[in-house]
Structures are given as C-alpha cells and as structure tokens.
Length: 381
Ligand code: MN3
Image (cartoon, rainbow, N blue to C red):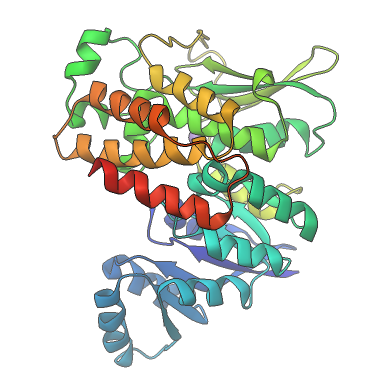
C-alpha cells in the first residue's frame, strides 16, 4: 500500500535523511511525499521539490515564500505554495497518512495536534512537542487512537526492544554518548568554546541539539519525552553513559531481562522504522556491527559535571509548566552560548534561575504553554 507522508522540516538533518529513506523503501510499503515544509532554505528546498514533486509546499519565512512563488513560476512542476502556520496546518492534515515533524522549536506543535485530531499518525522528530505539551499531546493521541512513532534513536530503540508492548517494562534505560566533554574537567567545560562543544564524537546533528548533547540537556529532554511516550514514571527511567553509541537504548522487563537495540550509529534506521513500524525493511541498512572491533563501556552519569541532566529530571518530576520553562530557558541560553555571550556555566545558571522563578501551573493549557514559552524567552534576551 502506498502511504502519503508530509514532512515538516524537509531541509534539516532529519528531513533530508527521511527523504533518502523514502527514496530507498520499495516493495509492499511504498511512500510518497505529498507535502513538504521548510523555514527558508530554498537552495535545498527547490531541488527537493523537483525531485519528490509534492502536492503542497510550505515556507515559514515570508521573504522566502515570495521568492519561492517567483522561482516556481519558471519550473515545469508547480505545487501549491502555502505560507506560515496556516500553511503548515493545511499541509499536515491534507493528503497525509503519516506526519513527520522534523522541525526544531515550537512551530510544529499546533500542526501536530491538528493532525492527531484528523486521525493522522505522527512520526515524531521534534523534541519540543512532548517536552512542552506532553500531557496534552498524549491525551489527544489516546482519544483519537492514532500512533506516535519516535524518530529519535533512543526512543526508537525502546520501541524496537519492546515491540510496542510497554506492559512488561520495569525500567527504561536511555543511553547517552556523553558528548564531547565526557572526559573533560568541570573547569575545562566551563571555559569551552562553542566550537569545542560542537565537536560531537558520534553524531552529526544541528547546532542546538549538539550543544544540548555537550551539556547532557539533550538526554534530560529525552527522559521527559520517554516519560510521555511510554507512560513511564521518572524513577523507572535510568540514564547510562555509553560513549561508543552502539547500544541505542534498552528496556529491563519485569523478569529482569535486558533487551537492547544495537547497531552502528545511523539516524536512517530509526526514521525508517517509524515509517514502516511494526515491519522492518531493507530500504536503508547500516554496515554490520563488528563485535571484535571495539569494547563497549557503560558509566554512571556525572551530575556534578552535567547539572543540566538533573535540572531536566527535576523539571520533569515537577511536571505541569516546568518542562516548558526548562526548554525555553535552555534554548535562549544555547543561542547566547553560540553567539559567544555566555559560557556553559551561563547556560546552567539561566536554566536554574528560570526554574526557580517560574510560577507553578498544574495542568497548563496550550495557551498557557505558549504564553510561558514567550515570557521566558523575553525575560532572558
Ligand atoms: Mn537522541
């Protein structure tokens, strides 16, 4: 059966790899890209449009939207060009069996909720969706009986290890590479430049997530996501540092068995699994892992050196508005760090300050979540 996929964020790292996956999947499950959206990168977007010929294309940036309309006039293939949030929503609910949310930031949240209400399955590659509005999103997923399939390698590993049956899970074990600062002292980390932080040993990703990996905030956000995705209390989500990134995460079942998903690091595999779940296919495959090639090691996370992980866990346990506060403060802090305005310690301080001064909201509405997000961002600029 041919399935229609809409990709939000097609020019980003996950979006680009998703298109590579879709090209390769052949056979009983074939995928066609019906709609594609990007923020403003037309240099990458136009060749994607020519190649995949989606029905609708969406651009979030106004200037890029006008430019794209002009440029497509000269092309043979002319899809409908949409703009902004309304465009994203229209693309997300029209001609779509699966919505892949691969944008960064909050822009995908409303389109995702609209898609769920329209009984469309979600392939989730956007962190903010569950971190900011996990309770609202998961409630809607259950009410509308749709699937939410994680694209992040850790959550995909948990889904693969459990085969989608979470009843027998006693603990979730999320692995972390430890990032570029694993073997650095606290002193060295504080002094590190953005360039050093961007030098991730195992994964090539966008800048924001790479900095989050260096502070272990990324792992903290993944813990919050796992809590929502698998309905798991925080005391049953363990973080294990595993520098080789071969064990992508694991579950411990009620009888004490550990089931892990392993393999050579590749984002293609989790993307492909989210699309073909619960089946597997040969579309894209990694090279075989060589068991005699390297030693696999496992370490406890160092919360003294990486307090962001603890801050995220605390925000998650407190729940309500706190994960939203954590996320907004962290994002602002990371951009300040990338601009050279603050150091890593500055990121920690901003997040801590935001969490300490936030007013508690127990079951925030979407409006309250967006309002808090905005207020936090403005107060730290
Ligand atoms: Mn990850």
